[in-house]
Length: 123
Image 1 (cartoon, helix red, strand yellow):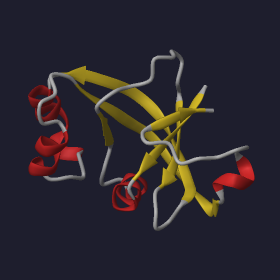
Image 2: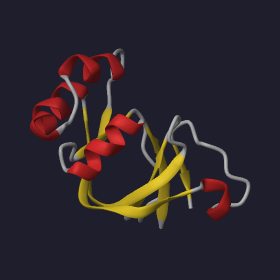
Image 3: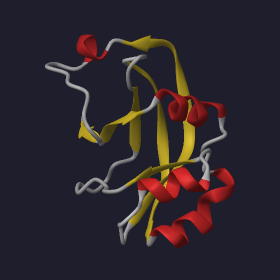
């Protein structure tokens, strides 16, 4: 099964360059068996630009997640801290293999009734 994640363009680009090997989330998918993430690069791009395989999903308190992932986070610690402020649990999706599409896809042409999800949507 696959999910589509909304990711800001600067972070999406870092995933496909290899600089960002973890995608951080405040909540994670309830369904089991998610193996692939389809990347929707949010506005101003507004396109599906690629996908990546999930190696694993880490779950812990934010401090421990940061310590384990910071070298390949692709972000600064203050951004991470602000994102998880007040949270007891953090999730880090580890990127296994990222594939940037040759041509970005217009979401409405490949997904019926597409709307950009706040976080993610099952496909």
